[in-house]
Image 1: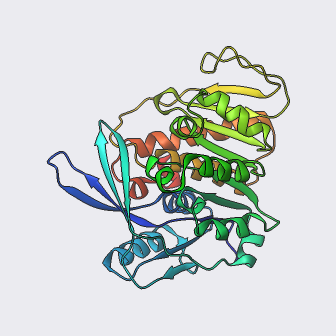
Image 2: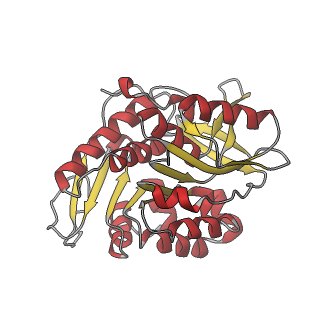
Length: 311
């Protein structure tokens, strides 16, 4: 049975800073988080990635299989599994990346048969980006793009080059999911909503911007802008712009919250989400409930909910 969703990108181990200064290992990587979230919510999912041949790789495979993610496209490449060291100021992590990302082989038939395809994060960088471009060009699935940028990704490649790649993928995305942090890194001179409008104007069908504790904004095409207190009053656009509040609850660790939003929205797309504003509003509200669940628990991927966990 082919997967309903194919997720392309890195699987790694996060070393999470603890209050006593030590570091706790946790399986992570934004695409892996998305794949685990999708599979746990009930969408048959394949992760296209590479791992090392060390004990960390075993932990990654155990979590994937235990969550229901197909491991058939996970390539074992001799060497260590990449690490991301996460340090915290409050509940917000900042990351440093160590190691090289193994390049997997692309199962073109699985991509063509899928309902949704996800690309983003380290998959945007050379040489992995060529695999991402090849997947993106395969007709069939709805394309979901989440740049999931980190400052350390910009440094070796340059902000202009990364911005060009983001614009390239955004232009043909059915869904572009951005965080406010992504938006500020891409276009420091623009507000997050102005950045989203700019990227939607390139061709992205639907854009969702997550704003942390402020919720999210949904941008839809050409149906007349709706004013919202959450967006810039100076925006002039024919796009529908809808602000949606977050769900109140305890915040323990925001690692993986944005990835859980992507997973929940892809789950809705794979289930046949109608291309209507009302359906998208419901989908984003559902995704914010999923994110609230994840925020209340430590660990990113391991915090992703099962269906019964989401109110």
